[in-house]
Each structure stands twice: as structure tokens, then as C-alpha cells.
Length: 235
Length: 235
Image (cartoon, rainbow over all chains, first blue to last red; front, side, top):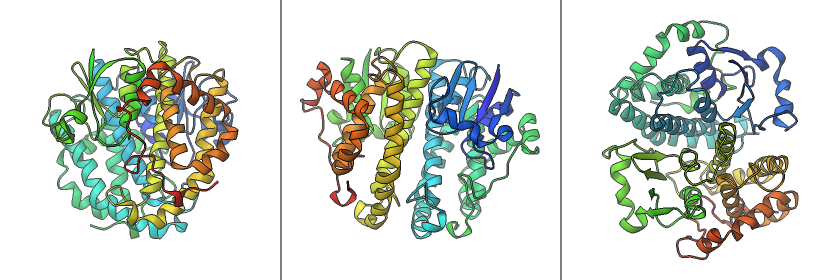
């Protein structure tokens, strides 16, 4: 199977959760918009292309499938990539965890865009400062504490007890949050030994290490979901 | 199969998307917290109960499964309830559409809580007014226009070409938005003939009609996701 990933160029964004799975599995894939430009996605998004119409990138072509929504993509290709355990109960648990990661990703994005996705950050800095405090003080401890607990209950090493796409997404989540909130994450990390160790282990997986060192890994920047605005961070 | 649904009492909330599927299928289920109180959920949420730990309600017990996240629940029980077509491609399309509905549900919730879920609406009314304008002007037309287009491309009657849990969720979405934004939805509805007809057909399904007329259907109110604050609405 050859995969075609469609996502905005110039940022990691939500596409990165899919990219990490494809890279970790050593899958054959094309990052289509990086070759042909973002406009190659228009026909899909406007419903003029065969297959299911995505609401937004990322979406993935896999054979005859066109799949949108990160959690649905990973649920669909997880078995093919051997990145999810085989039982239905474990596939559902993976989906549930991925959706909870996605919930936090929305909250992280809305921290710098609390008023409108179509506005610039500079048009909503006062609101962003208020929301960032709530995220730092309440939401990050709640979400990350939950993932730490799930990890510990599964044996302390893998979210599902064995390597899966959920571990890759937790790596991305923690790494993104450390870029965005270096002060806050330094404080919080003391209570997240399992997540920190998982992050390190994922970074050392040979294919992931090679990917992170390659030009295919776009650096975190202030166009993505995880944005470092120093004024939004605090210990 | 007897299902046990766990969700906060006193509001429809995200639990309603699951409840509508159970009701439409005539499934045997218990709405546990409505009988035993919200505190019955604590052991699950704190990881002291057997099975996967939910991050938040709703969650569903189905045999040995404990499943959280609305889209994961509906994906899991859809085949048992005969509320999703059988092919893998169509199950994925249902999941993808449900996740896009969930994305809009988050945006609707955050319209009255743009700064923090733990704060009262009254503590964030100025920010809510700004976000509501963006939702009314930009996000509602974009999301609802997408669902209308998907519906038309599937033949105009059902989101998946045949009755499914996605239709039930679209009914709930449109109904909730009409309660929350009566003025805006009156204007927008003119461009949504398929969604409006789908809403009517779902409401007339015998089991749904009986459910909506029963005491099991909590009325929309200002504790839920869809909240009618007149100051946030405009044509």
C-alpha cells in the first residue's frame, strides 16, 4: 500500500500525528502538498474529487479510501501499519485516547485563537492571555495527569501496554507543549515521569530519530498548533 | 446486549448523541447517573473501576467494554444497533462525519466559554460576544454548508445514503443550534434544505418521536452545550 497524505505545507499541525505513524512504520507515502502545493487539496475540499469529502486537512488516500480526521485516519491505518493491538477492545481504547489527545490539541490551538480561527493572534492577545492561564493552571495538569495515569495503569511504558500510534501522538503532544510552554512544562514534567520517559523512547526509535533529523520534519513554529509566544508561558 | 450509559444529569450535553442512537434502535439501556446520581461516575473517572479509564463522560458500558468519547462509542455500537452501513469505507465515513460534528460541538461550547470551561459564562461575556459573532458569521455557514453538501452528494436524504447514527447526530446538531441561535438559524436554514428535511424526518421516526415526547428527553437549557443567550444571537 502506498499512502498519499494531504496537509498544509510549512507547519507540522495536525498532519504531524499521521506523519509520525507513517514514518515510524516505514510506510511508503507521498506528502502530496509539499510536492504539488496546497492548491492540490482544493478539489477534495470542495467535493469535486471521488471519495469522501474532507472538511479540512489532513486527509489520507489509501487505495480507494479518502479518510479525513486524524483519529479516523489512525484508526483506519493502525492495523495495516501494525501500530495498534489487534483486539477490538484495544482498537477502541486507542481511538478513545487519540480523541482525548485531539481534545487537548483543540484547547491548545484555541489558547492562541480564543476568539476566532480566522483572526490573527495579534487581534486576540488579551483573550489569549486569559485563556493561557486557564490552560496552564487547570487544563494541562488535568489532561497530562490523565495520560500519565493511563500510562502507569498499562504498565508504565506504553499507553496500550505495547507500542502503538497513541505513543507516537503522546510524544508529539509532550514535545509540542514543551516548545509552546517551556516554563510551565518544566514544572509539570516532575509529575509526569512516565510521559517523559515515553517521549524519550519514541525519539530514539530508529525511524523516528532519522525522521526528526531529516528535512521532512518541519520545525515547530508560530504557524502551527503549538506556538511559542513567551507572554503566554509561566512556571 | 444491555447498555449502561453514564452522563451528567440535568442536561442533554454530549450524552444526547449516544442517547438518540440507543433510543432510535430501541436498545435496552440504563441511564445510570439519572438513577444513582452523578457520583456513580467517580470511580470510573479516577481509574478505580475495571476497564478503560474515561477522561470525561459520556461513557458507555457494553458487555466488558468501557468506551468513552461520543464518536468512539457510536463507532463501536453502530453495527450492533444497525445504525451504520456494513462496509469498512462507510464505517470510516460515518466516523469522520461524527468527528466533524464533534468539532463544531466544541466550537459551539467554546462560544459561551471562550476563556475557560471552569469559569462561569458571566465571567467571559465580552469574549463570548466576540466569539459568537465569528461563529455566526463564519463557522456556522462553513460547517453547516459542508454537511448540506455531503448530504446532497449522498442523494439528499441521508448523510451516508442510508439511515445511520450520523443522521441522528445531525438532527441533534441542527435542533440545538436552532435553540441557541433562533435568529441566525432562521436566516441560514434557507440554504440548508437537505438538513432541514432530515431534521424533520428524524423527529418523525416513531421511536424518536416517542422519546422526544417523554420525560427522558431533558429540555435544552443553559447548562448544556447549546445555550440560548439572546445577546449572542443575531440574524
